[in-house]
Image 1 (cartoon, helix red, strand yellow):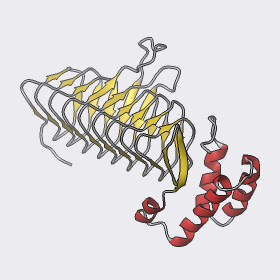
Image 2 (tube, rainbow, N blue to C red; image 1 turned 120 degrees about the horizontal axis):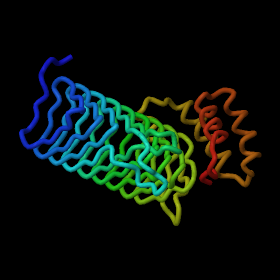
Image 3 (cartoon, rainbow, N blue to C red; image 1 turned 90 degrees about the vertical axis):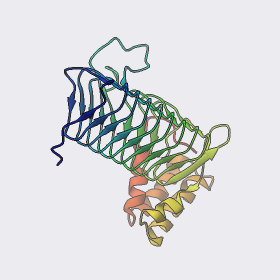
Length: 263
């Protein structure tokens, strides 16, 4: 753990209630508001604005002009105490906006660890983001979206409020997602995003071996490539799940949803 004092540019404006860990760097003209807590060795770039209550972990990098912890863009918000929590090791690029939660939506927006959040990405109120994800330029998440781990959301993709994106999924460029995306899938744009197979290359990169990928492909065919209704397809998925914990996760994800399944 570093014992270095924070390195703060003389033009930065920092509220007295903000807490900065050891080795934190704050760039020129940055503004850090009340009830902002920043973990060790995190870097805040020039012209960033951080509002609280916001808690940020260690070893994060915020590039210039990011707007972090702003009030939710929700007409129902009436100033109640809500917060943003960000984990460790994230990279947040220029003009990213991360909003706090809402009082009736759980009160918290949460971002995990080691995510790459590229320029102009918007993550709205009450979103829950996992770890090791990539949000490409201009990716946009409406409120209450849940994103698992190792997800890639390509540039200009838009995710409808309350949708869920499962682990290891890949959302193609410009896709408009208005339903839940199960784990492992790759979706691409038509009028709305539609499944286009499993994210096989991404799964290989994450260490999935051939039998695991084969089981996931079999589950995909059962759900998306036949004429079976959803309830009928789930019976076949349950059979496959007896020998594949990945397919069990796939089926559990489907059963837990409130929005229609993307088919």
